[in-house]
Length: 301
Image (cartoon, rainbow, N blue to C red; front, side):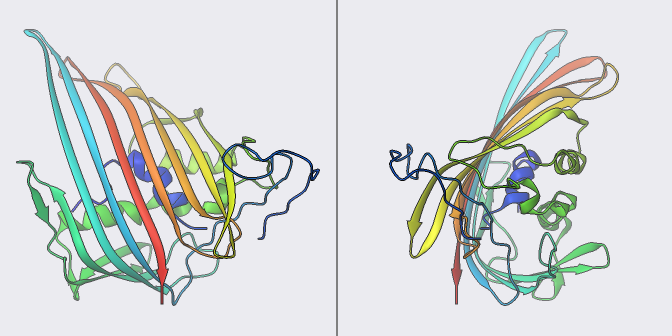
């Protein structure tokens, strides 16, 4: 059951997630409020809280991906569009989370909903709905079991994508190293961007790709300091030879989450658009992808 429809959308979604130091504020007291909330002259430290062992979360996810394929055949161009959707609702319990690790090494998920559109456009429920899925790291890889039995390969693959190499980068690696003002852009460590590019099964040029983050809003809620973080990732795909693939993708991620390290709660939206061009047996094929994802995470006792 594809819970991550397009790997490129997973890139930022999986690494940043909805994971959420008290902000250091400064500046003159007479400055007008910044658009969307916050003090335009103040600076804010940004720290997203990582998961902790013993915590539980209610998670809802949904998304859609439309892929338009155009083949330049001798008889003329042929175009086909395909739209796939998914949604999931589950309770996640973190059982093991080593200090400094990018992700838990053991967790369980109890699925109430897990479905995707099938080949005929009708919803297809996953086999693990109503069961407990255990995700556990064994050696260098993760295993995925539902009520103690291995998931079928097709259903295990989305979990493998989620808990794969893209998660080598910690969320803090992509955040500003120093307090920032509202709408002040920052660029993550180039090493982190290269690590992300290497995680994709595409010839991404880390040198021509870039990622920019901004804190666009801050506001208090339930005694916590919330913030809205926008991250724009531009990926350049440069395959070797005439077969390619070549193209570019833009991933726009918006996180609304505590930025003071107090809670893992938050919402995330990811929009991915891009084009890939390749040649197969002398035929030029173009893929245009438009994907949208949403995730909401709420801690529970």
